[in-house]
Figure 1 (cartoon, helix red, strand yellow):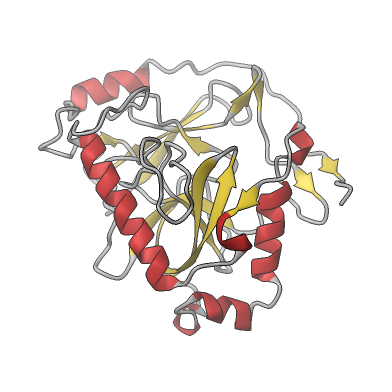
Figure 2 (cartoon, rainbow, N blue to C red):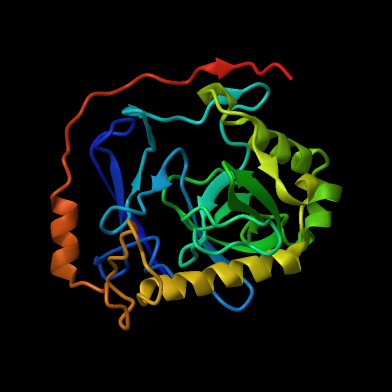
Length: 276
């Protein structure tokens, strides 16, 4: 699926938004309108780069997270500088907050499932790539299940060498350990405790990860068809024809044109040191 982005507002401001268009120039939701599967093996993902899907806003554009009225940034918790992989999400997935996972014992976090792309290419914000699923880590974030799926871009020159989580452990020594350390400590600068993990912080293999992705896709299907209560989530879409939330191209364009284009820049980029 060919997708382009349209930025509105200034980066690093509260009004900044990234909207998405399909090949026909029609506005779409990256949460609901981008197909999850490129084929039976490859999965579509969207790189976020210091932004998040606005799941409660119409058309779910990318925007920067807020915390207590201020823009939120990923802290540089030494020795990690920002994200250590391309961070993104799998469209048409949803971690149902009303479903208690039988493996983790916790309910979902109400978001699309997250990915960590270990490929060499540094992706741009809003870029859609196709990936191979390699494994997953079960983060328990403030009592909620927050799966982190480890993937690699299929266009990466080393992609053929990676087929399961053990390949990451063998070919990128220390990378998985760094990933656990990053997720454990990245909220400490915000005054929060270290995150916990299911399975004692051990990564699950490719088959387990694919099963998890498929189950969250089923939860999304229930969400978009209104078989599950959406709560505060916005399910507005332009292509899921059997969805009661499907809207016209004109309605979608009106949403985009209503977004403010002016605000003031903020400063950021500060190192944090965590006492272990």
